Image (cartoon, rainbow, N blue to C red; front, side):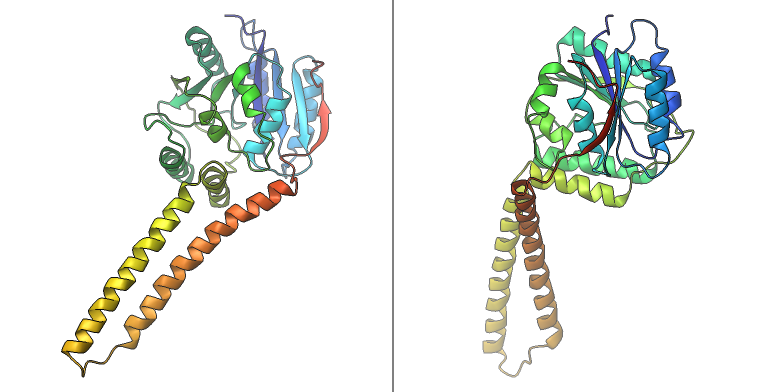
Amino acid sequence: MNTDNLSIVIPVYNGAATIAGLVDRLMALPSPGPAQIVLVNDGSTDNSHEVCRQISQKYSDGVTYVNLSMNFGEHNAVMAGLSYASGDYAVIMDDDDQNPPEEALRLVRYAREHDHDVVYGVYRKKQHNLLRNWGSRFNNWVATMLLKKPSSLYLSSFKCLNRFLIGEVLKYRGPFPYLDGLILRSTRNIGVVSVEHRKREQGRSGYTLQKLIRLWLNMSTSFSINPLRLSSLFGFFFSLLGLVLSVFVIIEKILRPDTEVGWPSLVIAIMVFSGVQLVILGLLGEYVGRLFMSANQAPQFVVREVMNAPTS
């Protein structure tokens, strides 16, 4: 299999303990291996910057290093990496060394043989922690509901894109990219390959609840208006419920004039309806805020330094 035009994009966040070994194994793949590896340091707080610089100096003819000015998020870092990827195919993989390098070649081979725009690696057995496993399942469920993702498709971070899809994805210039949302709105020519997933031997996952919430907001408010429609349904439902309860109160008062209306029911009603209104206002605020950030030209990412950038 010819992989002379293969780029591998790796977003790096606090991956100093694992990234050097991963790159060494990628570069040691049987010839022809990947023509280019793009490392994107996404504002790491450890010494990932120094490690990535050393790697790019060691493999000056095969590793491009992109150092972002601050932490922009995994999907923003991937967008930065894709903008420097020169291959006809780009494999995106994590920096935790849980995806065997050989599996990257399998994704490319499958994409070539079946002429797919994107091929997702589906783990036979996931070795992530409980929070990340739960978060992945939740995001896949939300993507199915909001983005019309095929229910049988698992959106993993380990995937291969062809040059056509890379070009379509990079057309998005907004500050809140969600890579799988960009893929699903560009193509349905999607393949799936079962891959191995190893346990994390070094370092620790940077996946947090805060990042999960940010990812869900990017997915739901940047690529779908269904949450707004859902809020309208909620408003209609609770308005109808309030009308029905009001009728019951009036009937009870007519039939039993001496009945005293209790304060607890009144307080509960106020809390429920106020809560619904605040949720809807918050959702509207999220949409308006994202429009403001986009109109204000908030950057998708800011590159501080590039080493061994491709010449074409």
